[in-house]
Image (cartoon, rainbow, N blue to C red; front, side, top):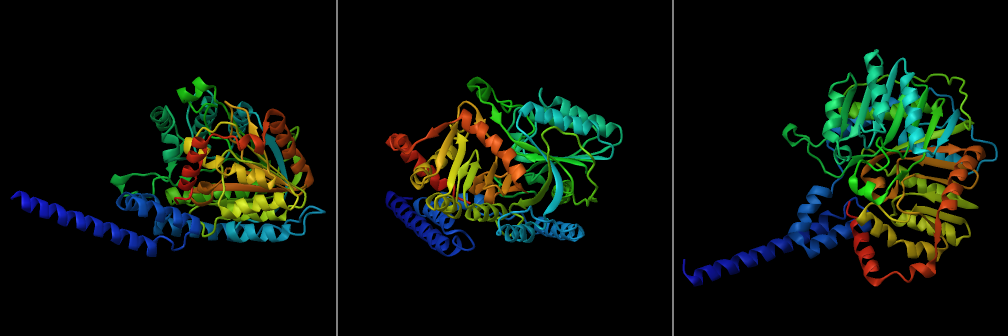
Length: 493
């Protein structure tokens, strides 16, 4: 071909590429806003308008939260079965003097998650990282029937070795030990292959959750996660909260070098709430294995746990891509709007959508005492900067922000509202936990359990320093630029 022919071909290809970009932009305008929040849709549109081809490819990989019709159908069947089983539970009475809005909150949770409010539970709040693992290990050691374990991240390391050994020993003596962990969440932890090799040598029945296995046809959006953390032993005792099953630095040399240690909060529960916790495990086990587990409501046994709060009414709220609504977000905003005196929030990753941001700032502006506990230094670069972009709006509204001292990472996830409600679980207050992660949140009612959770908040406050608006306004322009730029990425869902 002559040079003229090459020039013509290049021109034709150039115009074709420009036309292709234009077509992508037009398609995006009519496709992306459908069934998405305006902020999410605008973020995706902005990416595709600026870099059409790259943006469209990223959207195809990360823009949809569907896990497939087959898995969705299984989740719906499991949800219906759970609703049938839990309808037999006696209705729980709300604590005396509760907010008149609480019955509607309970109804909302029941409708969204199919799990009822149950009364008469014992709740022990646990703060010490090593002690939490020790207590869970003791519970497994005493198991006689079954052990159900589900954690987002797991690693068989020096700290967790007694826990895994207890599971293996229980399986050897005939206890039915079932173990779920997030596939990609755990693969990112050093020693994963060694952990899998050890598990294969035991009689533990284990399965990775949401696995990506292209050769077996299991392909999905790669950043969807099962972020839940729970343990149930014999249907009698249960645990849930924020802790992952690994040592405090996640076995990462960088964390050890910086002195990073994770700070967690879990609850140990007895009573009917254990059956509802077990039903969430059963639903996830069915989704991964197609095996139906039988969940029984067992009477609470007398427990002599110093510090345990008795007679607590509890309700578990599961959430995630398998649910039509963002159950955790709806619960959080409803509780925050119901506050009349005080709200205390603890979240390692506070990246709210508009509804949650408005709920929190509106509460502060109407005179509610609102405080937020976060880490002084984030362990995640993008999330840390996205979170920082909200601080000015929060501070100007009157929210008091407390920074938990570095190098510790405050990973606990809980909050209290007035003297009525305490909530703890696996869910962060960020868009990822609301739309992309499978989570569980446990609502606990009554002034006694609220007072116990307030003691945890008081401990955080004693260790933290308050971030003031005057200080924040002095933040360097280049950091503000990064904050605002990365804020956009939080909405790319």
